[in-house]
Every structure is written in structure tokens, then in C-alpha cells.
Length: 224
Image (cartoon, rainbow, N blue to C red; front, side, top):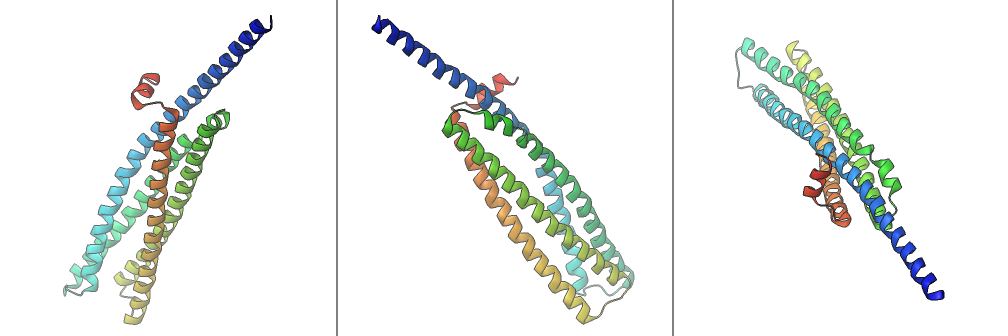
């Protein structure tokens, strides 16, 4: 009688364990789906970032040409300043688009929090929670970077307006350049922080996938 009871109890325990595994697998699948959907959304963000870099280089080239005073014709000087101003305005528009795409990607990822909180396995829950925290940190770092970028655009816009009006002295120009250089230093600092956060996020993502033991091919079958 006692032996039968023990076997029956063991079967119940095993059934509970299996139910827990299936329970967590379902949430792991949902989290994977959100992570990969977010990553796909970020690909658009990455393309806009490349456009931003290209526009910035074009602006920098025109800006340096004017500062070097390699142009003597006033019409050509004005045209070069206008070119720099145009690229500066283009970056303002691209910046808004990039923010929108990244925010959309983060929103998709953040929607997996409910699944994370429902995980029973302590190690998986901890790994998924860490991933969410790093995603949030990454989002905040990018937001700070874009704030600095927007400020640099504003400073450049005023500089080009002053140049076109011929409303600046050597002292004023020097002051503006120093202000811009400091702003670019701030941007580089935030860009480095964002890249560092991205690296940590990618490592945490890889560790989480390994921990759940759900491979990419299996996940594709789940969501196709």
C-alpha cells in the first residue's frame, strides 16, 4: 500500500515538473517572437542611421570648406553654406524618423515583460529579466544621444543663419565652434555608452537563447 502510494506521488511530481517546462517553453517562444520582431524593426532604424552619417559627412565637408576660406566668390560661399544648412535640416528630419523606428522596436520588445514575469524557472526568469533591463538601458542611452544630436543641429542652424547674414565676428565664430566641439564630444560619449549597452544586450540575448535551449529553426517553425 505504501509502495503504491509512493509511486503515485512520484508520478504526480514528474507531471508537475513537465507541466512547468511546457509552461516556460510557451513563454520562451513568445519572448523569442518579440525579440526577433523587435530586431527586424531595428533594421529600418539602422538604415536611417546610415543616412544620418552620410548627411553629416556632406554637411561637414561644406562646413570645413567655408571655414577654410578656400572660396572667394560670395555667391559660391553662400551656396556652400546653404548646402551645409540643407544637410543639417535633413538630419533633423532623419533624426525624428530614426527615433520613431527605434521606439517602435523597443515597444515591441517591452511588450514581452508580461511573459517574463510569468516564467517559473528561476534561471530563465533572471536571464530574461536582465535582458529587459538592458533593453531599457539601451533605449535610454539612445534617447540621451539623440537629445545631444538635436542640440548640435540647433547650434549649427543658428551658425549657418549668422553666416548667411554675415552676422558674426571672429570672436563669435570661435565661440560657436568651441560650443559645437563640446557638443560633438557629448554626442561621442553617449554614442559610446549606447554601443556598450548594445553589446551587453546582445550578449544577454545570446545567453538567454542558450539557456532556454530553443534554437532559431525551432522558433521559425513555431511562428510561421
